[in-house]
Image (cartoon, rainbow, N blue to C red):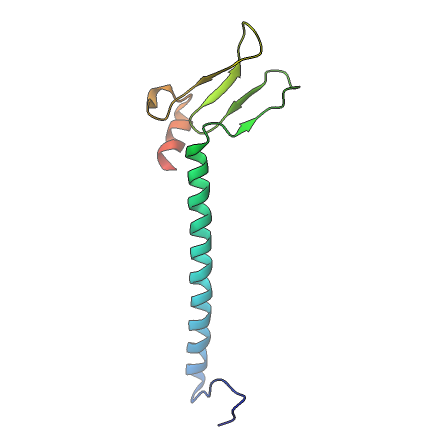
Length: 104
């Protein structure tokens, strides 16, 4: 056996098996990395009540997220009034957001 070769295959089937095992390990590592990324995204969605918003210069400044929305107050125009709480499911703004909150 040549010392520079790592494997010596007795048949073509064992070569396919070695290739399959190497690829399955790579897929397992990628699966783990993507699972960790997905868990981080889910944590951010639940920790941050609002995460999409306008700039202060835009008309009708406000923010919304999965379970909370904030709009500019009509009286003074400076303060943001927020609606929606995670522990009060009825206060979430629409049925679509309620369903998304359940599934995430």
